[in-house]
Length: 231
Length: 262
Image (cartoon, chains in turn blue, red):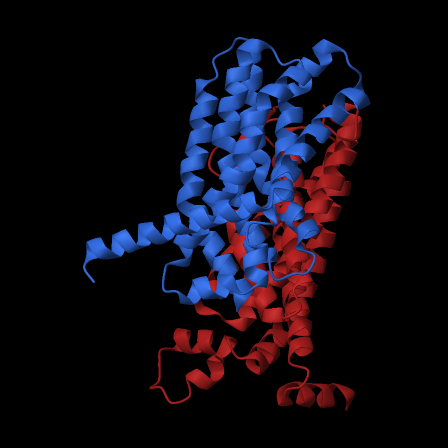
């Protein structure tokens, strides 16, 4: 096969896989909604627990929304490889001859489209609940749009490592939350800077750097993790 | 594949390569390290007693912090070790993943609990030092926070290693996590550092002039060397036990146990 043909078949496999995963997700629509509902419930607990004072809520809004996004992502992560692992599809992927890295990247992309993008789309409502000032809403949405793919990418390594365990979910959160620390710090710093009318573009730059780094490295680590788990 | 079976019919290699190959063989490793462990423990105890005597008794009290600065003789060496052990674990994890040497897998994985212990000591000593100095046990200061995150990463590695039943698969999974953590740790460290500043500036640098008096510095350096020997002794002791555990059905272990029991 010539190089071009290989490339064409790779990209075909990639998009076929993304399409299949999204299709599968939409056939189970209620499951699709769980992370979103979870996110809304968690965020709504904060005003109940802390009190409805608008200024206090506005102060903690970036942190609350971001932490809720972390939790919702980790909850949805288990679905990333679980069903494919259990019915043996994952093993078929491995022997299919396509690089496992590419397959992992496709799975991560479809996971983000299904679980990460809804968080981004829901964030205006959450910002409204948390009384986030209007001018920082745009930055909040931007940080989530850049940041949630990183969560899916880093999370995929953790899922790959814990997939062979029956109850990997609890361990998964222990593995990935420490790795999420920088994203949480930078993203909330950006929103807080925007709330205080300070420059925030440098934080968005750092976050984008994080996204580029994790897109380049995480799929390889996830593929290596899957190989270990399947061995 | 076993390292010891792979190399039997090869031509002689130079002494260093031979040594590395021999260390890959469990019985050889077991016997070789057994000779060093008592010495490591002995040097550790002598250095610790000496260092603590100099630090806790001989060194003068700090004119700003009074007697409480002496916690530093535990806190700082432990903090250095918590990072050094992570680096050593990550290097061994890399070797274990690339060359699949079982002994290196075991060494990497037995490093994790020791590193976690040093991290806990660092955090506890730091809190005790913080009470008289800052007036509170816990401050979300940059270094304490990154130590805390480091502890979580250690716990994740230990947790993953213990969660998977098959020992070699568990070791390889946990080694990969250690490497992922190694890539992330500098990022975590700098993001946390930038996020908060309250700690005093670093007052010991090997490159430039130190702002600490020599009578206070010496005990610290002695303790720093002592903790390295502790790591070596503890690591090898744990690794040998782990080897015996994993190879319990093999002939060399039976021989070792027969010798032990007379």
